[in-house]
Length: 161
View 1 (spheres, helix red, strand yellow):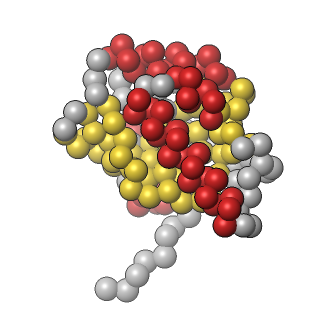
View 2 (cartoon, helix red, strand yellow; view 1 turned 120 degrees about the vertical axis):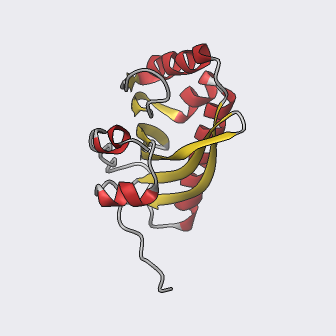
């Protein structure tokens, strides 16, 4: 991992103050369903499926897979992002390791990024949810510890050895 991927990234999106909440286990299941569907849509390069999961005013900051970091706005921005990924011809795939709810109404996806059969790096996405749709999402090419050290996510409790 290069320093630019984690340290140069802007602050994560603020979590929405309405929509799904974390008070009931069914809400946590809703976050899991939403996160898995988003990753599957990315892996399939299915722009229509991504749009169906996203709020019309989504602000999306993906990782820098190719080119420069960009921010994509709205459904048209998601479609443009998928087209740009498709244009690379690379077989990028995200494999979920863990999905964790974040307060008040968001989630964290910890994953591994592969190109073809080669593991490239740890990756993560922090997302905010509004009215059951992803309204903000920010991707990172870094591991959980780096995100915690940068105060982008809460530190997970460490288990004694």
